[in-house]
Image (tube, rainbow, N blue to C red; front, side, top):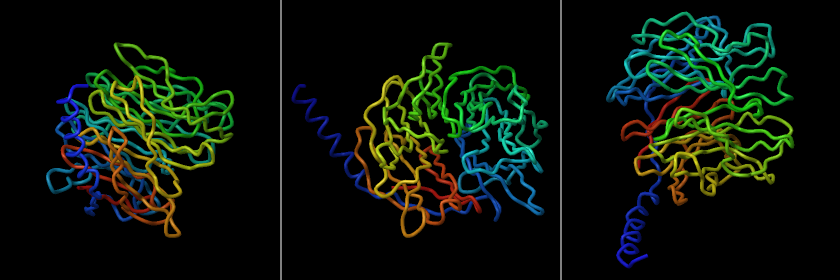
Length: 387
């Protein structure tokens, strides 16, 4: 390496150091969710606005899936997508709402029919204007009373979205199958395919769009019950073989309901996840500069006993802003920190403290120049993270 290049790299490191030495500031922002609400999820509209969705619980325990947009410094009037449905209210079974290019809105959620302990089904609804929604339709072809859930969704074509979900036709004691369903702008399923026939049964999926195509992160499974994180990529019109992100070699004969989350910006990708391999519970993050084809060695994010439930977004400089749950103060805490793609970790900041159940499954969003976090399984709360 020539002398001038060494000087340039050293200068860049020095310039970046102050940002990673700064503690993320947490600014509480009143959200649009009701006083009894749960299952918060984020997306970004084509115009760049944050979109927050959640489930409101009303009189007589009636549940409604709702969403609102953040315009400037205010939330739009919340819109109701579906009400009176048998929403599965587990923190890991997050409904999602996305806005497609061209103005169509798409929503998915999981329903657990009353009286059917093992039955879960994926439902979808679409809207041309974000106000009037199509009748909810079951997205999974198999209608048997088994598990179809832990879904994630992304725009995948002109007027269409892809939902990635798990199908467990033999119950939690057997491997599940990673599935993909394509839904058109009318909210109708047009295609279903199997992507991986042997995955962990009850851990959520996560999908992002890279500069080369779609990338799905999920917890895999082997014949020896090794349940580490895998990715599968759709590039140049085809699905590539799934790959292990990093061999933690976590052997567990049960499903931890604690999976990976993916973030992408162009060809830069970050995958964050929980593992307890080696009896060391921790949240890790690994980076890729080639759209998920290869990953570097992971960096541990937590500093105390980790519960997991990680979320991550990529900042404008390619660093990851992460959140997770960990033990602290006799309860659970939502923690955040910034980690650079080169593995430099910034200070840890506490966002909230409560019981694990009350905190739910925190979720991060990066929209424009702002980073947001939402959490809560009894009352959805929101905050903005700043330097």
